[in-house]
Amino acid sequence: MPHDPLLTRLTSALAAVPGIAAIVLGGSRARSSAHPASDYDIGLYFRSAIPLDTERLLAAVKAIADSPAATSVTPIGEWGPWIVGGAWLAVEGHKVDLLYRNADAVEAVMDSCRAGVVTMDYQPGHPHGFCSAIWMGEIAYCQPLHDPRALIAQLKSIAQPYPRPLRDALIRRFQWEVSFGIDNAELAVARGEQTHVAGCIYRSLACVAQVLFALNERYLINEKGALLEAAHLPLTIPHLAEQAKEVWRLIGEGALAPACDVSREIDRQLQTLTQSSGKQP
Image (cartoon, rainbow, N blue to C red; front, side, top):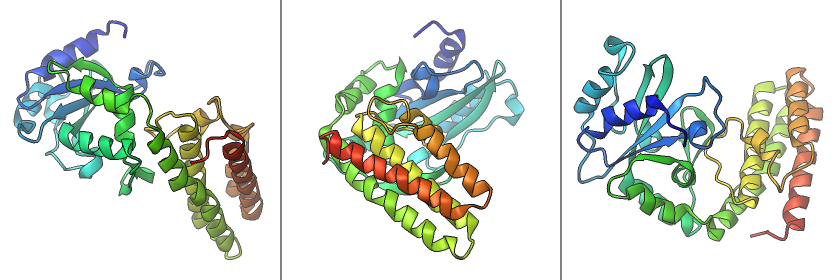
């Protein structure tokens, strides 16, 4: 990772906060796909036995935030069991997102994922839902900034190499739902329920992305932009991005039945790809 003075400053300020066992860089910057305006996604890992001291964390971030008076941090659990909590900051003009992670909970979920057990939960900000395998991907792709006890290195050994049982479980979990979502969208077409059709189709296309990532043994950690990224994977559907764009053009124009037809064709191509790849679960 190239030297980044802002990361050095953030790490120095956060590493001394009681309860922080490890600090990582996540998101697009960790995967070298960021643009200059991309957020800095910083994961703060702690252990159940030594919880993160959020009062000391607040003091630390106020010392570096561009607007200390407007800066706050959440209690642990404020953002639900999967996002957990954190803070939204501006530091040196850059957006910095802090995200808490309980390393013990992460390890337990990762062990389940490695064994082929995945869950989907409702989570604000995630229209598709929060898939437990996201935590596997966060660990696999993050870059440690502060890991004095090799906590992140230990967790990475669970995430890599990509587990075959997880790949099979994700394909089983999501492939059937592609056509199920389209079926439900078609039922709503006759009633002209454009919003419901759009929701069902979004869900179907998100499931397409899940299957394609699993086929390629890649972790999907953010549904935003996932379908476009899936269109460039080695195993993918030809012209996927163009077909998806056509679906949303048709829905926007109120042509709901044709939008379902294009979605059905994407599903047919996905089933053909899964069968021909020889990687069916």
